[in-house]
Amino acid sequence: QVQLVESGGGLVQAGGSLRLSCAASGSIFSINAMGWYRQVPGKQRELVAGINSGGSANYPDSVKGRFTISADNAKNTVSLQMNSLKPEDTAVYYCNALINTGSGVYDYWGQGTQVTVSS
Image (tube, rainbow, N blue to C red; front, side):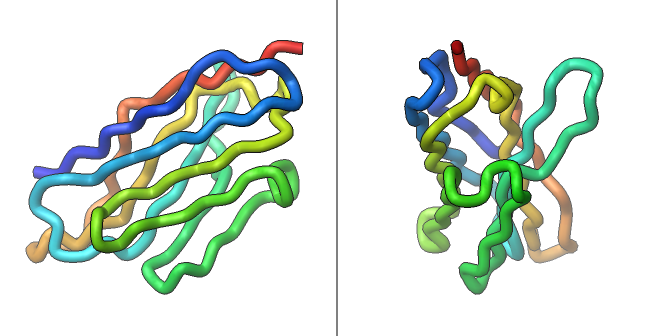
């Protein structure tokens, strides 16, 4: 059993910053990759930032230069620093992890945390 627990969402004014954190716990042999996605009602969930076990990160153009993902492999955590936030960044943000439990590699999701950016 693996759990992802997120924290750090909230309400912020445009131009402000927020930091999201996610901790993975449970039957973890290794973590292949972690990432953050976001979703607004009526739209598909989209990748915001991803990082692999080697530390290579990738971002879509919409957040590049504003968001930074980081991971602590020893603690099984991933964070997302969001700067220069815009109203269009408003969404529910989900932590995602590709985890090797020792019996297989599985995709796990957190429960989601709301980020609201006011104009």
